[in-house]
Image (tube, rainbow, N blue to C red; front, side):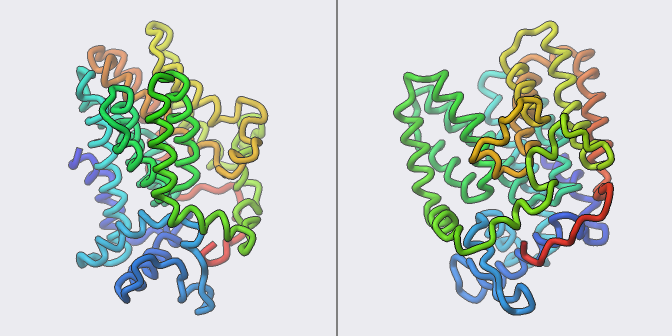
Length: 364
């Protein structure tokens, strides 16, 4: 798994710095966050060098965990950009470790499922095209959150789930919202006998994240939140299959990634009525915007991108492979074809745009 993670980030680490999409924002924020920490500011919220020295309240609304981790690498002697790429690599590695720990007690092929989760197409796209640093760290936390709720179902305590949920909120709030919907809510429905410890873990997890979450919510009226939704591409409806934005190559790429997850799930479900496959297909349908009005719900509309749900489908498919798929070589080969197709779209690290977008203001 370490070799796989290193292979994913080796070329970007040795190549000229990537500055497309969120990479330049990662750099600007990480550099200032590290400088503030080095100056003794334990929880930097204001970035004073932004906007030509006017400053920006970035970490009054953006979760800080990913930037603490970048700063640890920075303080270890790495420059800012290599620290960012190394954190992506560590996130891939951690996601594999988490998936392996999640699968190994019950699955026959836990390593196969773990590696598959590491190289799943949206997971790769998040790095290569989007530069989504905090979201990549949050994806790495997903298997650990599931381990926590698995422990609750086994009567082993709620503390691990509580910590995992708090860390996810403190890393990437939209992804934590989706985890609430696609992990915690189904658990509450299916494991009603363990509802009290699950609710306790969830509520205390929110409480542990309050140092970030309360200011982020309460100070919302004092910042221009409309900037987060001021373009069509920043709204979930833009990414719906019904929207038909086929002139946007990134839109096409996203739906190729969705297909690369859905196709093997359908092929396997024809023979195996495995609940994990149907869960993956349901997530793919939601990510593709096939359920009318779903992403228009008041809170879900703030997720911005419906395709952020795809890691949940990828982990479900990886779980199926860990438990049943790897014993069937021919079917794994069928699985590999669409995954390769998804990686072919996501893996070259170049942004694809149908037309130039309006530049986002610094530290947007």
